[in-house]
Image (cartoon, rainbow over all chains, first blue to last red; front, side):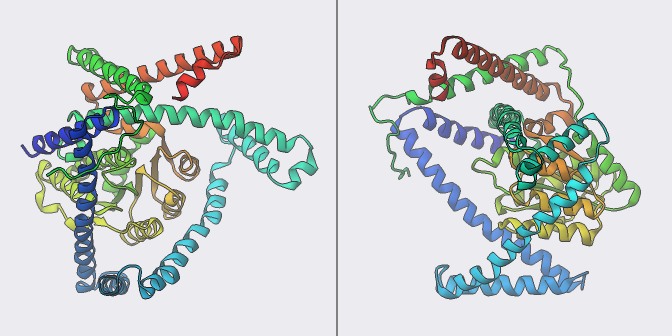
Length: 206
Length: 273
């Protein structure tokens, strides 16, 4: 019953959404619209659940004085402050926007900027000619990188064209292959989940 | 009460939406192949499954964690149970389920981080059920499954914080990932973790390949549940997947040859519908 009821609800709802995609049956189409609205409502209710989880986990850290409990204090204080500002003044208020634009956005951008250094260190580990495949990857990487900078063109006039050919033909072909296989995999896993054949996400012993 | 307002996508008032006929045809063929193979599996036909090192390495992670007495971290990535990321998240939860069973059996602590609140109760239930099934309900800790943030870099940096503080020996990242993939994988590797990544996002796969010890590419993300369970009915789905791939390749070859030899692009137009 613990798995059968959620599976039955899932199958029923998914059938409505699938029929809505291919057929024009007003009752089903309107029901599908309602279901998508309910999804937003459930997601918003679940946000409260997430906030409670954050409060529980971090208040325990503070109570037990665990490693870096100071960070938990800052997190809870800021979370409550932003929530109060958002509820009291709305999420479009200047104060709320200021917090978002001057704290959230710069921190996100800074972390994203570190990707340049991370790709350098990851490439250093990966681009070693340990076997044939790795050697091919290394060679291809060298050609593409050289083809994309002026130095490559200075070394050989054909370098940019060759690099672009690798990207347009070999790279695109592989990407499309992965994309099509992923799409087929998506269909199979969706059918398995909808029909209740795949139930590992319900847990225990699957 | 039904209150939704529906707008006709292609007009005309027909019951069937004609522009979506090929999507329906593809789905019907693949679903038919799935049920045909399921029937064969029930009759006892075994299907050969090639090795996937990334999934074999899950046991290695649990073994190493048990030996060292240190935890593992797993995340299904950035996304919820609705929308386009849902199948990847469910595939990630399948992996979490497998790891949770193994970890509960060998008394290894498993941290799981989610980015959408609606995934949290599902992930908690998976872990709780695994501990109960292993006969160790007392070792289940609700605090090990955490909602971190919906913001991608806050989510990623919080995971790295957990991995560093808890000294995790392995970081399993199979599911839906975006720009935070490299950040997660590379920092996990720098912290000395065994790293297993899996994504269907074409732009993130190269980052996982570069930064992770093992990588699941594209469709391999969806085979996790079947592969680790070795359940023949689940493996039947993978055979249907292969039939779908073979058909796609055959159609592409026929259309490419026909278009090249005749110069007629009508088949290409049909495929673009």
